[in-house]
Length: 179
Image: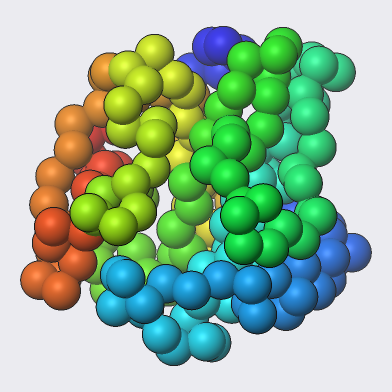
């Protein structure tokens, strides 16, 4: 899985930005994040948009090394059909993608969150050998992304979120601890 060992910069084409934006507009009515105190529709929509941009960046990054990488999924799932499946597959190995936008990183520090509440728990937290790629999406400059090399969950150092209302609901990886 170690196709690259240093962060890579990937620019997302405008056509893909539009596709991710359309996806975020469509998916917003199918989600409920009130269990994590997130009810602001604009924030939820933006999170889905940035997440899809991150998946596209990781897809494009791995395509530089192999054709055996799945494309991001743009299908809209509702209710019980939603899943915690991995975002992509590389050489048939599942890989999760976590993305933070640069404007948020400037406020809170570059970091990535995993859901860990009594109501919703990201199953990857229980899979030490699972792979994850972290992405910083520069939402201030034409969606240029920095894709960090993949890591296995067992190699990550989790911390508490800085925001008190997220404590007990999220686990965080800060960029300063990512290899």
